[in-house]
Each structure stands twice: as structure tokens, then as C-alpha cells.
Image (cartoon, rainbow, N blue to C red; front, side):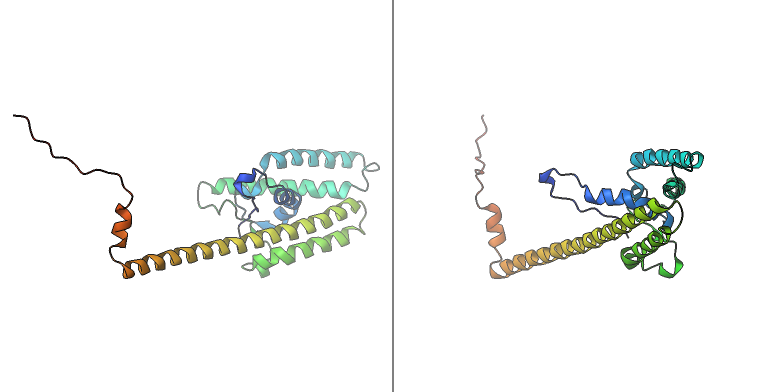
Length: 221
């Protein structure tokens, strides 16, 4: 399954915003729930590098200031763990570039063996349900209130991102079918024209040209 983004027509000059935003929100959970990503799927790397540094600082600060960061410690430690997983996936896919690497936009495989091979439906329904269950469980754990809220937001982002990918696949197939139908209709018209008038193609090819006939001049003595 490849990751896709709905792009507007080139003449509008707009930049995709919704899909990349959902991608950034969901990435900490994606690197925990999946593996074998494409190199470009782990984008935008400069943003994730900055977030990783911030998450690490907050996690360390929550460790030395437990009273001040009591409600947020669970979130920061989870994000620090997810950041480590992100870097490991990035190193792995960078090494694979020298061998047999997956498609750059490949969105990974699930770590749950029972759903391998059926990732499309599992990414749409299974992962959001898992993250929602984690959000409900984290709500009753100490120092995990913020983690619970973030997990709920991430579950929505996972679902919407999977919907965008599913819609993009449907539109891509539809465009290919339309292109095939257009090509078939064009071939049928050409065949019909040839059957109706075999010389029509030659006439059309020469009609409207302004090229003059060559004039044969006599050689000077």
C-alpha cells in the first residue's frame, strides 16, 4: 500500500496541507505499529528531527521535575520511544537503498501477523481502533492524561489518512480506466474512418499544406 496525497490541479498553485498534517500527527504511532517503510514515507525529515529533539528534552525534563510534569510525563516518554523507533526505521531503509528497498511511498506492513496481506482494511479500521483503545486505557493511568488525549487525536488522524489513501487509489484506478476507454474509442473511430474511405487518411494528411511543387530549372550551358 502506497501513501498518497490528494493534490489540486497544477494551475491553482496550492500546497497540500491536510494530508501532510495528518501524516505528522500519526507518524509516532505508525513507527510503532508498522515496519518496512519506504524512504519518502518517512518525510518530512527536517520536521521530525526537530520534534525528536524537543521530545527528548521534554522527557528528560519530566524525569528531573516529576511534580511539575506529572500529567505530561507519559506523553513525553512515549514520544521519546517513538522517536527512537523512527530513527531505527530510517537507518534501516537508508541501508536498504543499496540493495532491494521497498517503494519510496510504501506505507509499511503491520506488525500484527494475523493481518498481514490485508493491510488496506486493517489500516483503515484496525489501527485507529487499537490507538483508541490505548487512549481509553491511558486515561486511567497516572501521568498519562496527555498521552490519552494525543492518542485519541492520532486515532482520528490515522483514520482520515487511510481514507485519503483509499480515495486516492479509487481515483487512480478510475483515471486509468478512463484513459483506456478514451484510447479504445479513438481506435474505433480510426478503424471506422478507414473502412468508410480508405483514402481519407491520405487526404487529411495532405490537405491544407502550402508546399509548392519543385520547379525544374534548365542547367546553364
